[in-house]
Amino acid sequence: MDGSGDGEPPSGHQGRGGARTGPGGAAARGARLRAALLQGPPGPARARFWRSPLRGPWLTSVFGVVLLAGIAVVFTTGLLSYAAYNPDLAAVNDTTPDKGLLGFYLFDWPTSPYWLYRLTQGLHVTLGVVLVPVLLAKLWSVIPKLFTWPPVRSAAHALERISLLLLVGGAVFQFATGLLNVQLTYLFPGSFYPLHFYGAWVFISALVVHVALRMRVVVAALGRRRAGRAGEPPAAAHPSPGGSGTGLEATRPAPPTLSRRGALGLVGLGSLTLFAVTAGQSIGGPLRVTALLAPRGRGPGPGPNGFQVNKTTAAVGISASDIGPDWRLTVRGDGGERVFSRPELLEMAQFSAALPIACVEGWSTTDQQWSGIRLADLAALVDAAADDGRAPGVMVESVQQEGAFRAAALRANQVRDPRSLLALRVNGADLSADHGFPARVIVPANPGVHNTKWVERLTFGGLT
Ligand code: HEM
Image (cartoon, rainbow, N blue to C red; front, side):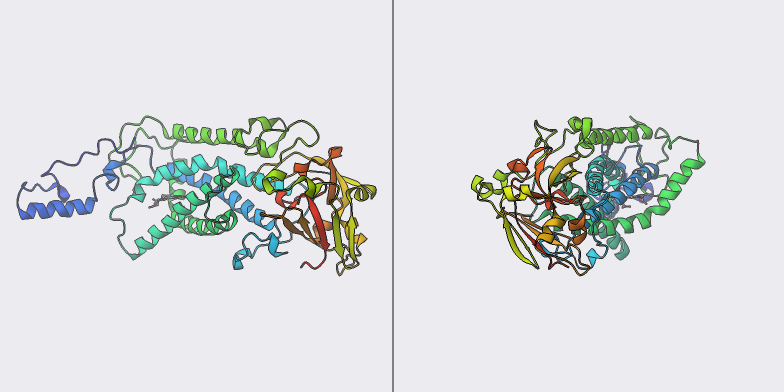
């Protein structure tokens, strides 16, 4: 426990080196003031306030190493998620158009393996949730240092404090915006994407500086443990007050109520519990019912269209007449424009592909059996061809008039994949209205929002 019994030394016992001064007089008052300024205001600024015997470089280092490994995966999969939108292909694909040099790593998103986005985004969200207890524990383990007194000792110290502000602020911001987004709570001032994107770069830059500065402490703390009794963390029951010189240990430790190993176990249990109630939304199968935190339900519901839906017709304002018998698909390319009704599309050669829907919010479905017309065949119908004579990229537009992702551009490699369809049916039945009837796009490894529903226009070519 922290903060208990932070008794101030009685009046007359202050002063460095324990020098006694009388209760009155200017000299005594001056000495008391100097001592108070040195110690900081009563409360968390004083080292004596923090009494948990668990704190120390070993525990902080263990949490740090776990965070480092986890955050490396979360950061990488986050960048992959951005690349999966093919942001450089067309303005409609770019959720962060002012990224500048921060888009240096972008590449053409592949279509194989077809479960790629399901894996990367499932990892990103699941690990982000599972790391929350570790992040909180790490912050708890270093909290006395956030109240360091005096708050700034020198210019170098000021810089270090600013980097810590970016680190702690960045971590809290990234985890909070990510969690709010997957729980469909859009409290952000503006679009989630640029906030989370720029936030990630600020946080990671601060983290790189932090790890570089602290690695020696980590190596020393974990090395000390190896040199000690095998398998034994430093005993919290016998802390060495102020021991390592890092300022993490309590100067006046309270009796332990939990061992350090117990603290690690508790944090591990928290992470494991979050894993158990989250991972099922990405892994699917029998585990889906355990995904208590899944924002799109633990389904599947009944029937061939019973798998999860993100945007419903009602949510985006699509009426029955928009997708009724008068609906037509317009296909444009170098060879002109053709217009098809749904019955005409159903008469064309139909192909099928087993593909999942994988959402940016981390949830995904198992493979669904889609059938419809290959995108490459539709390109051929309007003589659309890239320089190499094969199908070019396509701009896909929906009947949906308002809101994000009503259009998406697909690259040539996506159009050419024989599993990429303008789907008319799923699992042996017509698409339901909420799954994109009369026609929707389905492309392997594509983020869910780019598998445009209620398609009304395909324009082949003219994309980079
Ligand atoms: C979300 C990521 C992280 C946050 C928010 C965070 C935050 C902090 C803060 C605020 C401090 C106190 C700084 C001070 O005044 O000295 C600290 C100390 C420390 N951190 Fe981190 N940290 C993070 C990740 C890591 C990682 C990945 C490692 C190592 C692999 C690490 C290792 C350490 C160590 C060893 C200390 C104590 C060093 C000392 O006081 O000399 N941290 N951390």
